[in-house]
Image 1 (cartoon, rainbow, N blue to C red):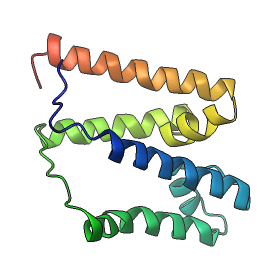
Image 2 (cartoon, rainbow, N blue to C red):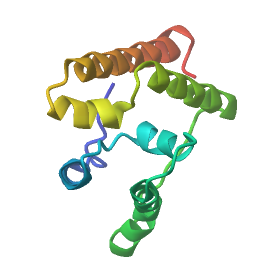
Image 3 (cartoon, rainbow, N blue to C red):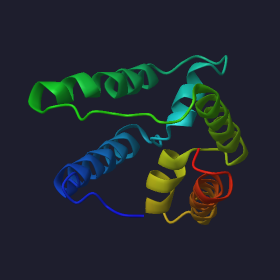
Length: 144
């Protein structure tokens, strides 16, 4: 593995991470809710009365790339995997978030900042599953 140092942008990564942290802090201090995307989306389709803040949060997520483009050049994205691989990966992530009762944003960002042992175990599990999947797909299956 190598890092393309010409394309490495630590300031944009730091800014993005700080904005995610700030949004998480504002949400938990403002209305006492965790900024876990799977929980936010799941709450929209749970059958109970939907809280309006969930819609605002999702609109902000979808609007942010367009706002970004007003101030900077949007980086080019190149997806090299086949559609069936992406569909299976997406379904596996969805199943994993149900088993873990949360996603990487809920456990990894919000849960770890609250020193939750459950979130630590979930985040370590997410990361190990990702490491193992990349190793298997790149080195054992043959560069999918």
